[in-house]
Image (cartoon, rainbow, N blue to C red; front, side, top):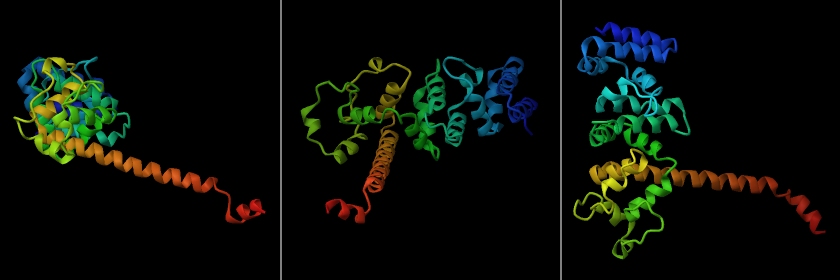
Length: 241
């Protein structure tokens, strides 16, 4: 049976009172301690947990963000796409505030997200505004578009580069963690590449597939636009006369 606090929180979410729902969950910490909330969240519907998480980020912290486990967070975050937020601003804020929370382990959270169905797509959504930078980071191991590149690496094919991601000797960090310690997209990309290379590879391929699909749609739109602007064949002949 669900804890009374969870029942109350669910009812408040149903009527749109997210702040009240978060307060109800926090009351469990006040009365029974941190561990009680962590255990209770296992029984809390992922969609309701997401509703609470979406209202809080690094600029507006919640105890829930600070205590949610990697597995609980992963189950919730993959549902974010249902909101249809094309900017993915809320997703960005949630991931940054939870994955990089004080005392947390980003590697554990990224592993949990990468293992769940839809997790890699969610991480691709997170990087949707940084596709060019992620591609550059994959090819050069740097976020600096003007940095010198390794000539030997430049000679590798794309497939060889992808294969080397899983080779710990070949895929050594060019940048130290301290150089990307921004608690934002660069640190997330760095952590994925060097701590979870298989997830990084999958996210990269998803981003490429989306870019290719978008290029195809753009080409079709341009062709249709050109066809609409072209005068009918009869009019063209009259013009020639």
